[in-house]
Length: 250
Length: 171
Image (cartoon, rainbow over all chains, first blue to last red; front, side):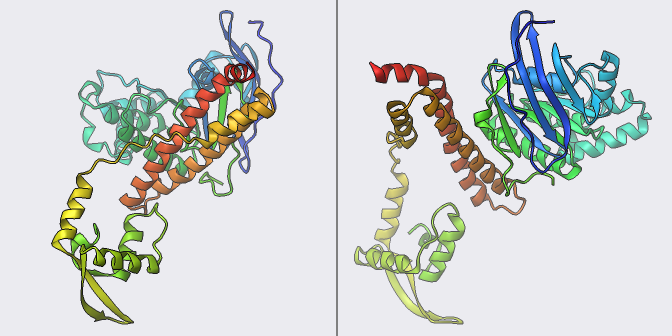
């Protein structure tokens, strides 16, 4: 347990979306270095929330706590009315496999597996029969315009192709919430835009909630709302409310 | 002249082409089209042809002259001077906020300005990701996004340095 003192911060709530993820007074430290200093927020169902901030501001740590990868030192994370932060590692792992999708900068595809095998993997781990998993994987590869790469292994793909396969893998279980950390950070501008446009289109069609961590304002602009982090806290003065013209799920 | 390079046109066609191909620009007024054609005619860069009448009023058709074609080539070959953007109204406001107030006032302004910029970026992003958007509209939105993003980066940098700037102004 760390000794970081949470700052008093307002809860930053979405408008027009019932909350699906809730965080209350989250504190997390790496050894004695505080990374989160008492963050409270809510993410609405179907909302695309961008979390931005400079390197070291704590935005990736926040994402990992919200996704149940890290257990906070203090405070609580909830998924609907289900507590995540205090749940066992096994329970959090099950949640990540069945209800959440996680996408990181470099995709983390298994290099020995083909694209279709990579995308089918989460379904196989969840107990789906192989034929059904492969059929679903092919459908998701097609949705991201990379069906022709089904038999290709990651080392033979471009960065953009590889990341589209990774997005398909993150969404193949049809998660309720997708947590994406710098999903286009390793791509050139055009490839990044294509991945973001497809990711957002598919998420909106499916009503998937997305928590998107990025340092890039052009990526954040795909979201309905932005939270800015500074030194482990939310910069409440920089909160942008969902606009009347916002394109989010309602 | 660029629009006339694709063949003879009357003023109404030119206005319609301009507004379609340059969606980020202010729509041309008809009067502006005809005064421009008149000026180009006086300079020998375009010439009037027959008057056409199709479902409406008479419309004079213009085409590019040889001199107009050369002038267009020269313009296309010339590199535009990179705009220095030295007149930065955001910077002026930060400086004045520090002169009449303190770091908090300048930071508050920068945060609210940042939020307004990002809201505008969201609007352009919606425009460019609309399946019905033309490539012209996508490119116009990209241009606007790149400039707004540059402002945002400057604001981030200014937020980090606002205390130092205040100390400098108070010296």
